[in-house]
Length: 462
Image 1 (tube, rainbow, N blue to C red):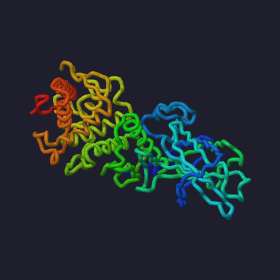
Image 2 (image 1 turned 45 degrees about the vertical axis):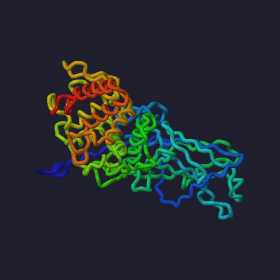
Image 3 (image 1 turned 180 degrees about the vertical axis):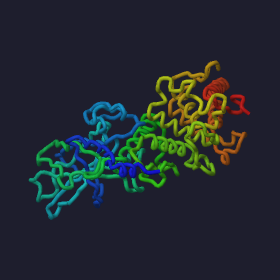
Image 4 (image 1 turned 45 degrees about the horizontal axis):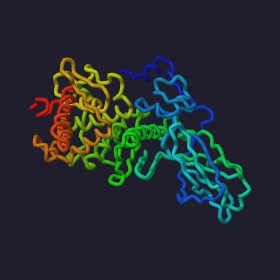
């Protein structure tokens, strides 16, 4: 069979040209890739006089699954999903949680003059803005009467007291771009404020779909997960025990994986859709709840199929169902009106035990945190359970603390499953009395029955 290219050549017609992507809007300043020896981040010298530098940093967003409305676009509007944007300017969103380092640049080869001296840093907000207060006096005496010159470095790494995460090529190599190396930003000698303009996290002269631009999309997905689960949801990040989280991009593992409680390997093809990093971050949260290694399970990295009709081991169904749940929770899909209607509940069809299907687990977990009371048609009251995401994580966290209470199977050899999670929820209620145990048992039965999952002792499953 002739290839398409050969056919067009034989037919004598030119190959159809692929439409070039539109250029970025005017006024957005791209960055520069440079490996410079960075000055140590020493305490900033402060005096009476300071200057406040303000600017905005954006990235070109291509994600489909995201918390878009938590960011602002180039014109300050609440961001919209990619397919709902009529204006090309709406594709440029605030580079939320990226960090901008500010360096003062001296050119005179005199004592006290430093080619690049770090003078401050700021974290970018959801609307792209950042503000840095820098010393108002130049330590370089030879240039004290000249405009002060500044160079910026933006990076896909944030580290605070508790949270620490990055998208990086390697452990200590987050993506970074420099701005102002050839034409520094300037502030008059006596200025108390200076505007740095609008910056775009992409290298000048590169195709639109480059590694830096794609890394910015992976970073946006990572930030969405961190904000939803840790900052808003209250789930402990556990940095002291497990350290930072790194999304390694690009990776040889093209489909993505999470080999440890610290590392995500992200896909390296096309524009990120957003769901891969969210899904893999679900595995990070799960691992950190179960001691970093899925409670000692011998083979935590196993192949599985995303198909709704593929049967999995119950441990894998819970593990992947939890990761799918995290994607749905972070993106808000858990809370769509009637997201979990009867027609969508089962992975294959009604009557097949959902304990083997990630999709059923994902829907059960959404049921547990949403405000809907769902039921299979004709099945009685259905589920009427509700907790917040921190409460759900606490149940998950407690599940591996009670491995001696699950006599039906060997949790280390076979892995913990959703039936163990339900058992942990019920057992923990014993401290509050028999009535609480029965209430939790009823919750568990409703959740399991609504989502076609059978557990021995709870739903009549053998």
